[in-house]
Image (cartoon, rainbow over all chains, first blue to last red; front, side):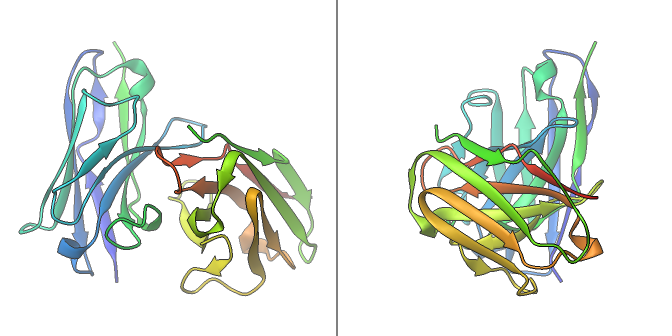
Length: 120
Length: 108
């Protein structure tokens, strides 16, 4: 069965950096696009970033463009997001989500999420 | 950016009742590019409907989606106890991908 397991969350000061990872199993990771979606405490969902199956195309929400970098390792079946210049408004649970196809842009499987808290 | 407005914010219903959830888009969206998700407390969202009306794998037929243009609807024909939670709509026809603010379906 499909499993997505995020790690790397924690508490970081404003201006700091954090790298999240998502370990994927139970499907052919190298043929699907992958996303990061976040949810601030008590709030709704916000799409953050997408990477195509082969890493050739990457797209970002305006709120994180220039600060976050999505990447993937198809040999290790792992998705990453490097988050720099973190702000208090980046505080959220970050979900790794599988694209329905390569670039269908909706999400058929989600991880359980990892909490990132940006606070001094 | 396409803004999705969900209504009502909260829906208080009893098991067995029919639930009708609405999502209005600020711009026309092809029905091909519209999805609904369910989120239960402390859990990740799960896909219910895509392409406005296609049920995801394993989703029971009491869930149905409809709509086109700017108005989309999720209907739960007879609420079961496990259906209570928050429901989000999502459009994927225009960049950036956006979600609605959610409708909470709670037990009356």
